[in-house]
Amino acid sequence: MKNIIVFHQNMVFGGVEKVTLNLIKNLNRNKFKVKLILVNLEGQLLKEIPENIEVISLLGVKKKDNKNKISKFFEKIIEIRLIKNKLKKIIKDEDILLNMNLRNMRLNICLKKYKNKKIGWFHSTITSDIQTVLVKINYKLFKQYRFIYNVSKEGKKDFDRQFPDLESRSKVLYNSFDLDKIKEKSLEPLDKSNYILAVGRLVNEHKGFDILIDAVKKLKMENIQVKLIIIGDGPDREKIENQIKNNSLEKEVFINGFDENPYKWMNKSKIFILSSNYEGLPTVLIEALACGIPIVSTNCKCGPSEILNNGEYGILVPVGNSEALKEGIKKVLLDKKLQKNLKEKSQKRALEFSNERVIKQLENQMLEL
Image (tube, helix red, strand yellow):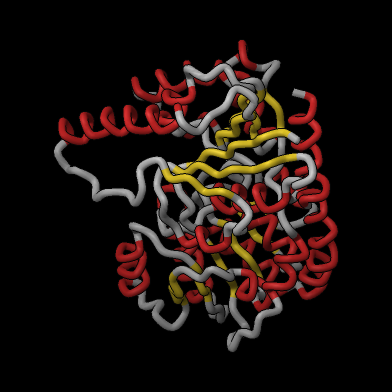
């Protein structure tokens, strides 16, 4: 039996966190003993971690950010020393170390001294990174990893262009999903109907909700009645609410906040919409496929065109174009035959991202290490 230590920052409700949770739940317990190490012990998904998995927090609950940059810098230095000291008591020579997010510079620094076999994940595309000095320093720490998983083929191409010396270690491993669990949760009763849906953290720069709301405004101007429900929360909530109010869309757009079961909303929706400006491998698209609903998505880097097979399993529109997004939504709303076709194909497509297929690949590679 191999000992696996999985590292991540926290367990807030996000795409990488859901992938982490799914992974630790579904690794074969007859072959792997799994331990989860979090920098901060926080997040809505903590309660979903199985009791038989040991969870260790390196720094406890996250403190409020210090706004003074100099103080913040020294605080991070102290935290790195604390993490290093704690890891000395945890990591054994035979452990395989899995870092779920290679952008986490503190973990990369703290793991550098260990000669263990290490695997890291790179979510989203490298081209979305702002090339600061710290980011470039972090890149140099990638050399410690035996394998680096990109979650899409397009992401791997970008990664390999940036790091040609790491191309032999760079691999593609899709995020995996418990499709049966998604289907089960999608059947939870919901007293809503006749709406289109978006799910995600309320950050316009990333998720493009401002473009989506503008598309809804244009649908209203064409007398196409639509109700958009957004499931999620985040720093741009007030800005988005002001956009809704300023455009008199209070009867068309509703922000319902965080919901730990977005699948029930997916199940009842007429269309699922992804309006992002960039992604890694957008988990919500795969979850929407698993729920069997038509999809309209921006063709952003990285993932949507790969997941939807260049438009075979959903409508792809240009990034940041509210007119094109409006036309995509309109096309699906008005074409019943297209709706039926997309619904019939979606769940079959979701099988490509099932635990049975993806986690088996990871297990085989870890056993070969």
